[in-house]
View 1 (cartoon, helix red, strand yellow):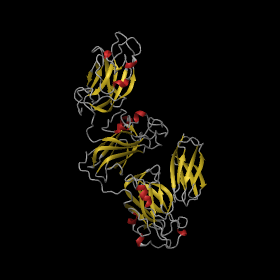
View 2 (tube, helix red, strand yellow):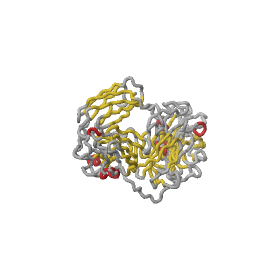
View 3 (cartoon, rainbow, N blue to C red):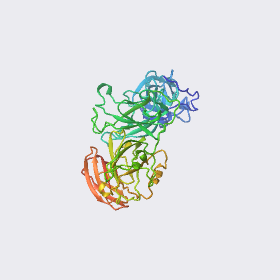
View 4 (tube, one colour):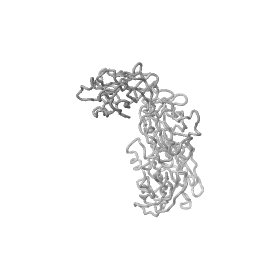
Length: 597
């Protein structure tokens, strides 16, 4: 038990009192009639007591009468501590002392209540071993014997509920703040997660590690970012433990039956994250290259096509986060990591192709280090030529997360005075990876400079750029795509980062990107596709895929350069569910997630 604060001696001067009503079911008077309306407002049990005794003589009756058999449930704004001795006091207003009685029950989550005693008039209650650390909800049930009486006899009168040991502060190393969260739906991608599993604050402080619903469910594809009060130390072995609640998993289940899975990330500043790995149910992670971290980001990647034992797709709702704890304590002297955000900082592999004439690319154009850092954006030899068919893999110090409303990367290419793709079509395919092993195509074809959306991958830390230039369209001395640099344009480090990065592009390079948007979303039978076209695009191929990756619709649209084009697509025959609309032009490729109702 933990004593974190002392109770206020003067009940009217502040203190620790219930702040909200979660349930109220009023009983009747001793005569079976309704309780006086003036005594029927449950909110009058909140805050500090008014010490109205005898209540019948008070000019303003600022309390609530439960009525015989009535029930009132109240909640505190934050968990309250279980300390030595009595833990809560119920303030009651009665004209006759000890004549009215109530049963007191307490709960951590407002769902599972345990009885802790009965009281008459003002009374104090000890939580005992019902909950050894804290509670947040109190249920008061009138159990006054009905021995008759006048109509004013209306059961236990609650003036206030006071905690006697202050707010609960969890011992150990746990998060104390929800920075952000985005809850996903159930497995069917349509049903929202139940309300009792949707409070992100249940992921804070010490995990319960039991079968109560004191956790936060991420939902399929959902995510949450938590902040620890102090930096998590990177010590020997794993540093962070994530605890998940899967009912009955210890008896009849495991990851084969309940493959509820997350990806974990860590950050020192809440902006730049590194990838820690994946885990099913309870998982430990090492902080890797970070000497310490203060933010943990968790993203649900539970497979949509899996079977979750004993649950239907409308009930199965992804990873249930009970809590996060550090395993090596706090870092007392945190020194920020010497890492770079905003551009690629190292190259992993470089497989250079040949010039069109079959000879090696010039040595001055063959240093892969020239693709690192911020691009120069000028016609100087500070780039690397891939050669025809060549490729390079670059790594960022931090993970890049998809910005759902915009592109994420800018690839800058150096082409001497040939800034038009139509006359000098140096092209690449761009792939992304989170771990450097599993790759996702971000765009099949990018010509010259261009922006890339990583939507298809969700999050990456590696980028692979493969030359796809057709040698027959160039002179014998041509050497394929020239990589000047790759810039992150959705960075949270600087609110002007995106604008500054785009300004760093070659000023003579035309806007070659076509962007797309879809409405309505969700839709019932058809969608309206709006294309804002680039300067060199002439056609757009539109394809729709289901969640299994099957192509369910294809069409090609003729578009004019630098214009707005609207296309209505009928998808009436498709079943309800999630689909992906893929729009590909000569210069860009974009994927948009839509839901059919």
